[in-house]
Image 1 (cartoon, rainbow, N blue to C red):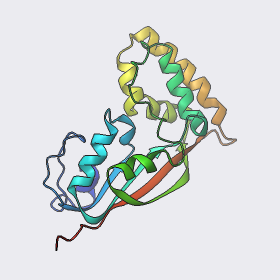
Image 2 (cartoon, helix red, strand yellow; image 1 turned 135 degrees about the horizontal axis):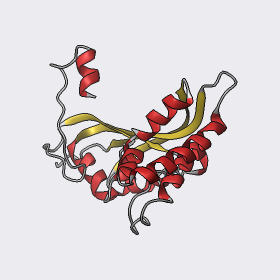
Image 3 (tube, rainbow, N blue to C red; image 1 turned 90 degrees about the horizontal axis):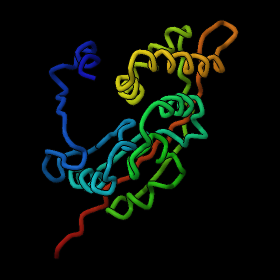
Length: 199
């Protein structure tokens, strides 16, 4: 993100600050808008996360986010993670999964419970385009969760995983030899309510 901001000439207009989503280092009612792109799935305490976002928003401020749809709606990506999971220790009980927030209306009740209103959501189709099978493999192995998982394996197992993922990716090869893997993302928004006047 920082690199993109610099390339776009916005380095002096945007400030980047790494922080814990469950303990945001900002004051109350500081922001008009809070955005989160494909990060909520990894928040251990989602209610606490929503409470913090609500806290830093101004009255009638907007919260919008994108999460991945269900595993069934993202068979390509889910298949890659399934291959990786064959080589990793079992997932710890309660550990968030990449696709668990994709169920329609799942988040509406959670957001309303901390005060958000005017919930809206849409399901958007995404296509991962890669010019070749090699380019697809480079993208997959450098992707966040997949990259972390691969780094935990020895060289031999990494080769096995590469072979299986390339085979899985070949299902999405076009006549022109590109890889086009369909996916679905759930986009939603909600607003912090009006403040109650104390008369």
